[in-house]
Length: 593
Image 1 (cartoon, helix red, strand yellow):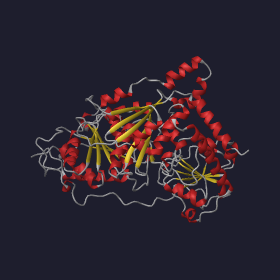
Image 2 (cartoon, one colour; image 1 turned 180 degrees about the horizontal axis):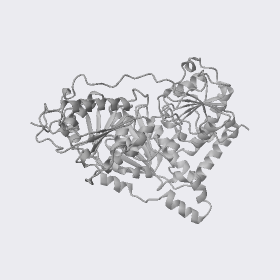
Image 3 (spheres, one colour; image 1 turned 90 degrees about the vertical axis):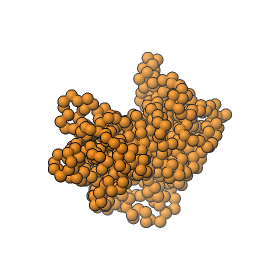
Image 4 (tube, helix red, strand yellow; image 1 turned 45 degrees about the vertical axis):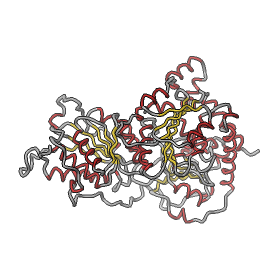
């Protein structure tokens, strides 16, 4: 049987990616990508990879991103056809770029002779993702024409070797083996007709990818990204230092704070929350002039994105900022105030024996304890506070989850609500979030991907989303009957709109008059009136409306299977006034009298 060059090339590429560690492929259907579709289906049938099919390319991209997150940074491939299908990957590519996740984008394209001719579904896909990818190459269509030793219409051995070499470079770049900066890569693959085999394929085997093919380069020790001073030792008085742990900071941040005796300001998705030095409601406490003024130095790990008070702290000219930024990518310094940027925590910082608590640390601990008491009062059961609020829902979700749980949290209000209440009822769950660009794009699909990957590690996944975030990616609920089963509980805090904007300057403007309020509601608040139960029914997903926090806790503690949506409706409170009142109460409680 003669196998068309396009199919031969696709099979060789997929087989090679498998040898390099790719175990999950997300496919969005299409015609030009048919050779890849046949190849990944063949590999999945042989048990060599896990195939996930989605009809929406944006959902497919975020599903892949979630799979990589849930598998702790494993490379995941995404297959699309040509045209707008490729452009729909862009939001997930940007998120993967900024969070350093290794997505391998396999986009099908017309052969070069059809480009620029008005051929259907043909646009300029070369370089479409710009600087958001670590590696990009336009792979010409295999034809075998340059190899007289092969049968006409068969891909040549040289073409297959070249393709495997490109695959090796792509995986190496995606994993950051040379740069120390993992991220997405793009292989734009031209395929020439015919695009389908004329008979069933003989079966994908390990030797489809030839022995001796180049493998990814070994990891390299990345030198210092930037070091303005000769020594990593901190200048000044180290006892008046705080650790800011942003998204992805990892356990080093918490360990550093505890070894050195420094307060810890940890975002929910930092991986560093909890412990004796973690300060509750730190972003609110920074509103206390006395507390904020006591800080002289900050050590930043991860990428802090949640809080304007933290950004103001990092931009203060009287504060010395040291940024720890592994890899060769851009370091987080939005205020452009870093005195030193290091590729890792200096080992000497961990060697110091834990000092006795300083007055500075004790002052911040006491303030955090007072803040926790205020939050305890405002997030107690519905019988006291008169019904669920966004904060009480976030606390209930965090409180019922244990060490074998993962929580995917949406951007906007949910992640900020979670930040305030995390740790009030114990250490809390591991938290993942799309904080690379902090958008609401693809969050349902990301959560599904996390759940699929986390289940292999024996972990259970939940998600906490706002109503707009849920609606923005409601298509992520769509799964075909042949797709791998997934267990995921999605808690949707439904306040009928984008109340996050009320906490910004737009909310203050809305409070100045009725006309401004009406404008705010239409273009920022965006009430939608959607019936989530009917939407879920249309997707064949279980839906439960709970009306109080005890019922929510019971629903989360009960066994569950498949995808379930738990909706909690909360009032459209004046978020600006609510946040100001809470901030005032916390600062007053934490201020010595």
